[in-house]
Length: 171
Image (cartoon, rainbow, N blue to C red):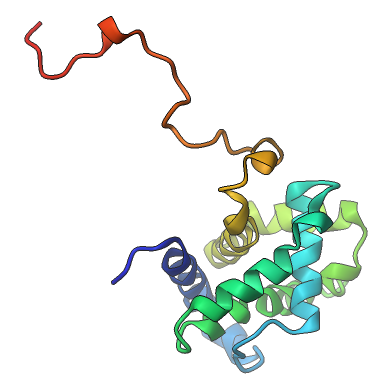
């Protein structure tokens, strides 16, 4: 299997969806190959939550739509169904929640934190997979590294004096 960033996203989403208990999985809508308007609203809300005020300029939903286009047709429904699954399960598990995209910013932050810190493993998996999906396309953009808590690539992060570098020399 090709170990690209896209395939790792698919694996993360697939394992999260498979971790959902069967009775809840049976209540989910059928999988689709593209993001719908509700999915894009959830993605936009999560982008604002994770990236901060400038998130709308990043066009996360549009970038993820393009990512779906690069995937094999059998992989597209896995990623495309993740936002709506999260939204539906939020409403089922917390009936007072309502649609995620329509919540206030504080309520969205609290709901996402609840998913990420849940004692139920499937909720943590779905939350992490969704977080990875939304953050995935900006890891290569240095302008957003600080806002998502990513220190950047290891290469070039530390300056070591040449005399401290050892290449198999005996001590």
